[in-house]
Structures are given as C-alpha cells and as structure tokens.
Length: 437
Image 1 (cartoon, one colour):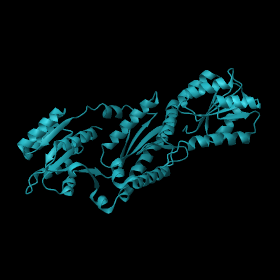
Image 2 (spheres, one colour):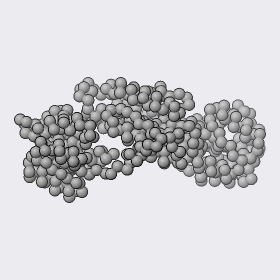
Image 3 (spheres, helix red, strand yellow):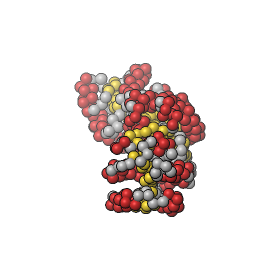
Image 4 (cartoon, helix red, strand yellow):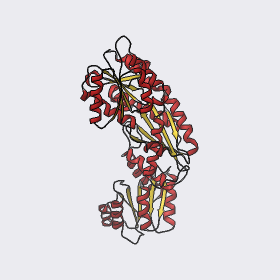
C-alpha cells in the first residue's frame, strides 16, 4: 500500500534513479517526473508525503516550490530542494519560498537517507491519533486516495463499532478509549506489514489490504470482537445484554451491547474512478452489515451493488400507534400528522399484527396494557421475534413502572405514563432517523 510516497521532480537521468533506489530502501514508494506538468498532476492525484525538487528544471526552484505549495494545500507535503549550489543566499531564497530543507549536491547516500527519513518521520508523527496511535482521518483519506488512483489489487475494509457513542456517554471516556485501544490491538494482530490501518472517525477504522486476505481478516475480527464484548461492561449490563440510556421524564432507551460491522469493497469487483465513489460504496456495505444482529461483515461482490441496496431506500416516516385509549390515540395521531408523519392507529391488540404487516412502519408507539394483562408487552415480544420487523423501533408506554421488564420484552424505549407530547415526539424524531440510517 502507498502509505509512504515521495515525488521526485528532476529532469536528469542518473541521479533521480539513485535517489529513488535510496528512498525505496527506506520503505517508501517513489514517483519520478521529468517535467513540471506531469509532476503537478501526480501531486494532485496522489498527494505525496514529500516532494524532492531539483534545480535541473527549466523553472527556478523558488517558482516550482511556490506552485507546489499552492497545489498541495491542505495536504502539506514536506518539500526538499536539491541544488548544485552551496551559496548561503541561494539556500535562504529557497527556504523563504516555502521549502522545508535544502540539500547541496553531491550528497552522501547515508546522509540523504537520514534526512528523508527524518522528514517522513515528522510528517507521520504530526498525523497520529493520540488514543489509538494510528494515522488520523486526513492521513487515512490520503493513503486511500492513492490506492484508488493506482488502481492496483486492493481491498478496503471499513470497520465500525456500533453503539459506541451511547457506550461512551454511560461508561465515560476512559472506558471508551480502552475499548478503542483494545480493538486496535486486535486489528493489528490480524494484519501484516503490507497492510495499512488508520482511524477514520471516532468509532471507525479503515484497513487497506489484499483482496485475497480481506474476508479472512473480517471473519477473525467479528469472532474476536464478539469474544471480548462483555468484558467492556459491568456484570449486570453484560448479563441483561443491553444498557439503558436515560432521557426526559425518566424514559429509558434500550441500547444493545456494542458490536462491530465491517464493509468490504475491492478494486477487483469495480473500477473506481475516484475516492468519493469508493467511500460511498464502502459506507454502503458497512451499513448493510449493520442490519444483521450482532457483529457481521458484508463484501461487495461484482454485479451486486450494496450502494443501491442501502442508499436508494425511500425514507420511511410511518408511525403505528397501538393505544386502547381513544382520546390519547386521536391526540397522538393528530400531532404526528401535523409533524409530517404518516400515522395509522389500532385500538385492539389482536388486530394490530395484521395492520403492522400491511402498513410496515418505521416506529410503533405501543401501550403495554393494564397491570393485570400486559397484552402490549406480549405483542412487543411477538413483533421483535419476527425477522421482518426486528429493526422496527418500539416505544412502549406503560403505567407499570418497571423499565427492565419493558426493555427485556424487546422495546427500544421505556416511556412511563403520563408523558408529555413534546417529549415523546422528540424521541420519535430521533428513532425514526435511526431506523432509516
């Protein structure tokens, strides 16, 4: 993978080849250009980490360096000027034009390697994420862009920790940082020196590897993550299998334990023209993996578009209200329609399942029933056991103030009665968005 890349701009024959060989010994890739036009194209396409410019070019060093500075913002590569001159004023002029270093030729091979290594080291140290000690978002996107542009044999893996934000809110930063560090160690154990890993976002990692290894790596990560999940929780939360996120009016939202979703794409299955197209398919594949229960991965195959399956889905704004109280049911329906939702209502539990199948809502507001029968609680369990409706959000309202009993039935939100309309529709708005994501 092009994790380290140096661009050499030098119209001579022998010395650029020598410099290229020395840099490759240091573990970096090299692109050599003999004219400015080609060099500037590669600068934009590949965003190299360092640029070596020789005074053998037709334009002056100062002019070329200023142009590189302009074209490479904000990737900001290190710029090293190579010149036959050793005059102080020439050095000052080049450095003032924007170069990071000035090397006079001839230069000893060992000194050349040491200086290039020093610049690359500083460049990478400036883009390291503090928590995981991995390359940060800018560095990750830069390497991914090069990989797509090269159009070689590659596979990209988006590795995401689901429900991470809720975990962090309840358990705190120290615990969430520990989770990230642990997962980083697990991922690193599955990779070799030819692979690349970086932190793409708060709970997301990007892996670049060989297509032949990607599924094996994903399978291992899913297995390993599921093995350690419960260790991140206290005994009570681990045993019940979820945590409770509290909100307005003592409402409690059921949050499943963290899991990992992995989306995989490759240059073999599709010829990507740019970074944005690759990222779109990668996020789509990861979203598709999220639909499965627990940890899982999805591979985008040739002739199968995960992007179409996920991103082109119509936004579902349907709400089903199952409430025996006619007045409350009417009030909820009217308020929901005023806020732009498509609302259906049922006053009887026995007929609700048939309406659910025909209406196919994103969210159900379900009354648990009276304290003696709790028919709504039984209906909630039945809905969540049906694979077709397992992702439908359920807000279960009840006069029985036992949130664990409600959440153990599979409800996504425990909402004690009485409640205020403003509060319940705040929850509805957020949960309908969650469903459609």
